[in-house]
Image (cartoon, rainbow, N blue to C red; front, side):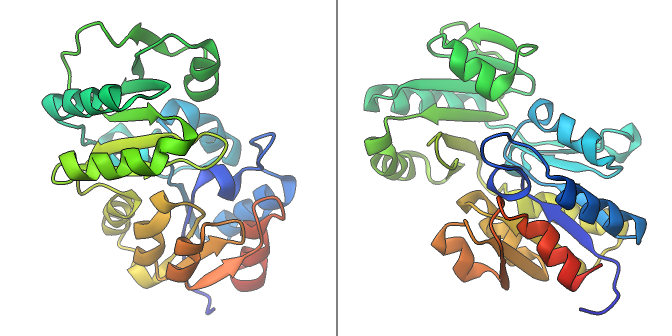
Length: 268
């Protein structure tokens, strides 16, 4: 690659982070810091809410917008004048999705309204794993008055595909849904037309960065649009086959520091 100024977009789980410890390795952190020192820009693009990605934003010392909820929320943590772009689900749509999930039979359902979480059945492990101890949590039976950012459905593993087909049959015109990677086969539902590429396009437009200068790393189906949008879409070796087919390049796994390896060979 030539010495362009790149916008480097990184997914978190299964891409930037290790599997067990959910950590950024020293080599990967060094490569991203070197990229920023050379004038390249680094952004996080994740399905996680901001509260569950803020620690990595700070650890990397980023000074760029961040894409959360798979594009349903884009904002700049250090510059309020940049704007907050929040695109929630319609309340009636969210209630209908919850009703579909309840009649289908699932382990649990969570509805996120920015940093407030409504959960169908209290579960300390889910709350601690997904949301953290400082999150406001209420039971889903409490009345929702606000359009939610996302609905998270935790189905039984053998029912994941069938439930996704049911969501398509009943709600395809108004929602997007993606599946988290193992071990949590959670189905995340957001407003139709939203994805990480929408957030990346907004960031590119703001900073006047051409699409061909975007490098994006991902591993799951919520990275499809981002990988296709980027001038160089890079799939991790541990990525699902569908993403690898859409990518321009394949790097090593997240456990083998694939982001660092690609940047060292092609950018730094």
